[in-house]
Amino acid sequence: MGRGWRGRAANAAPTAVLLWTIGYGGLRVYWAAGNAPEFPPLGTDLFPVAGWGSVALVGAAAPLAVALRRATRWRWPLAGAAWAVSAALVTLCPLLLLDVVAVLVPGLGLAVDPAGIVGRLGCLTGGLLLAVATDGYRRRVRGDRPLLGGPLTGTPGWAYAAAYLAAAGCLVRLGAQAAVGMADVPFAAGPAVLVFEVGFLLAGLLLPLALVHDWGRVFPGWVPLLAGRRVPRWLPLGPGLGLGLLLVVYFGIGTGQLAVETATGSWDPGDGRYPLWFFWVSMPAYLLWGLGLTVASLGYWRRTRTAGA
Image (tube, rainbow, N blue to C red; front, side, top):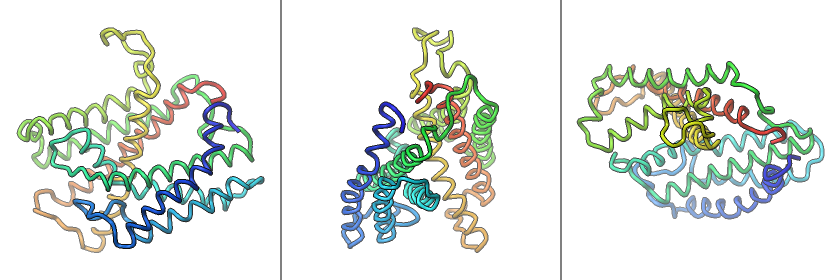
């Protein structure tokens, strides 16, 4: 098992999953029994599965946590089931992306629903805890080998490729926006939208490149007061992993839903302002952005980790 806080977290994770199942599972049972809030604007906190389906998924985490704790030999079915439930729990939280935007940039007209945020954060927490427990089981019975590999002495080519693919996804999305006549929106719709667009560019262009270039680890000379100082590890890594994961979940599910609706002819054009092609360009571009940002963040993780971590 790993040393330091990672080893302690892995040891405590199965117990944490059990406690989470009792607390959060009780809340989901209460909501599924007809006591759920309205969850504006979509009427649900989790997607695409809520209600008793989410209760069953939360409940499945408990026996898996017990099995992970007690197992002394490596069993692929156990690890596979635990990883699958962990991934499913995380996948039920795509609307967290909208929550983050609504909280960070008020004034965009996005609803801030405290109950919905609690439901989604609770589900995400359980998925991550189960992932930590599963990786702890792997390290305990197969040896103390980091899941993502050891430290790197330089930024690998795959991380560079991922970062530039993320930036390309952002630029493709901006190109689609300009093609449908939305290029002047930030200046016409008020300061909140302008702030959003500036953040959009920073997250889509500056952030992925910072994850693979030296100035993402040491502040460059043009940064006042901080030039030459080491960049705090989690300053780019936290937003990179967090935003990357949220983009992958939200637009991965959205692209799948768009494919089904296109194939079945059930796609709803809404007010008709945006044609179908716009969504087929924009949503995969967002997904590429998220995937690239996540992979580049994993490269940064390994590049900045210490030996034995």
